Image 1 (cartoon, rainbow, N blue to C red):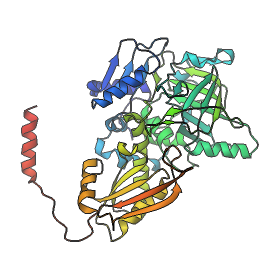
Image 2: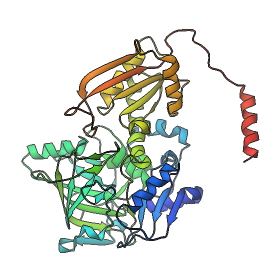
Image 3: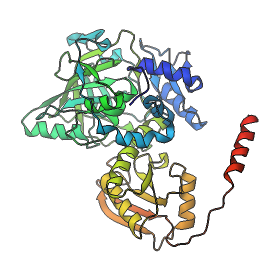
Image 4: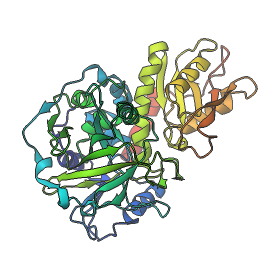
Length: 459
């Protein structure tokens, strides 16, 4: 699928910077490990900027720090070799062609291997991001584990708090496949599950392994191959029986401990709040592997552009595909940042039958337990333009007839407004209910083309 020739993080960055030099901000000034990198990223957002950030000089660190790689949609599209307007449609169809990984003897991730007494998480620039955080957090933690029964590999992101030289606290509150693996392993009488945490790899590997949401029996290294368009090269783990992408920047091997209740949190989550909710799991580290000149890739936490887009883009693609199974006239799906890219959803539909928008909204709510609000609009409304969605609500919606509430449904555990995991769901039908409907004002296409050309010459 990809038109990119690179298969590791650094070559992707070089290709992207060559095309979009203004979107990569290299900071040579020394910065403190705690707070400063996150503060710079969020301050740039306040001014409408969200560049890739490359911190070349982090005090008390031998590694440069990369942040905000996923802070704009065009970077997802660039990795896939697409125009941005084809991103969600293409992502939704990629799982049709998984390609099994290839085990290779060695790779750059094995340049430096620390085991036993050499293991010390302080060697990595794991930073404290917010004042309220319970400790220093590794935010770009792509857990790779195997189903304890079938051996199928799954990858998912979970926050990791440093709790010692060789120990992390973590939370599986997302109830994703790793949470199910842990439950299954515990039922089998196991007290630990081998895992590898991958930190920094080509975006296509992240898309296929860590962000793609599919059935629990899908091998996500094979899905990554589908995104890459070729087999993903992996090496065998050094201390655990879990394979690692050969070109990863850093990998942390260990075991997810299933019989502990260890403090973890609070942590500044995508909701914009310091979340104290946690499953209080722990990871015991057995090895740290990295490239000789590794880049430490961190994700900007909190309700940042990067954190929310990583949630939203994969969810948009998965939801679009799921809805079209029943409703082929669904045109687009958007998860806006105003709804944390997880709890609000806008759906556009072509020529809906009477009552169909409610069915579409109900299907979306059933597909994603975190959703609290679904707004359905006609296809002439751009769901990625929140002003247009709100305009449709203002001119095509009546609160006494076009609104439905579902009470006491399962919701996102990190939503601070829920009631012991239960939440209300809101459906808004902002489509035109009668025909003919008032016409939108418009301009001739040739006139618009002339206006655009004139304005382009004046820049």
